[in-house]
Image (cartoon, rainbow, N blue to C red; front, side, top):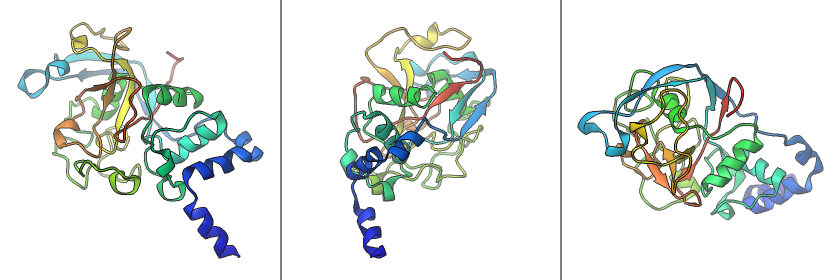
Length: 268
């Protein structure tokens, strides 16, 4: 009898598992937010963007930015974390959620979320999406490295990337934190590859030319939101710490997830 119960639980799809969460009063009461571990990024300045022929037009000019101290999730938000959010809020599940098996995929990053889903999750968790400048500092550090781990070109041992265009949770995505030799200077994982990550900012290709030196938060409005970090499908040139990408905020696809940040002194 015990073995039968185990097998049934293993094959339950994410929707059925989510129903179990919602039907459990005890579980619902326990879900009050996201207690995922975060790294502290101290206040100070760093060089953002690049100069010369190595960067694209929207990655220039190289400019100095000063940021207040903030914290950022060590890991991309996983399907198991997102399932607790869905159970607590009743929000519509993300695209392809029916293919999630939490027993197998619970440590994979959630995909199929648009910018509004990511923003809502972070707010529910008592956090927020990082600004583009915060994301770059957290990934790049203060020594202007090309990748979170340094300047070595990505390999299969450093990042989940260039694995093709066909998606499945089991074959395309890797468990968060798997690449322990590829953490950023502040101890954040998967800042290159696995999934693109939504950030707060609206996109503007010329924003760096007029960006404020202290705590930039991007344009007031726009058509696209910024994403950072590259995904499981990208070539190494898209995994650069200063690389920028943009999508309409309502986009849901198999390449995009997110992580949260939090202000240390007050909230923006």
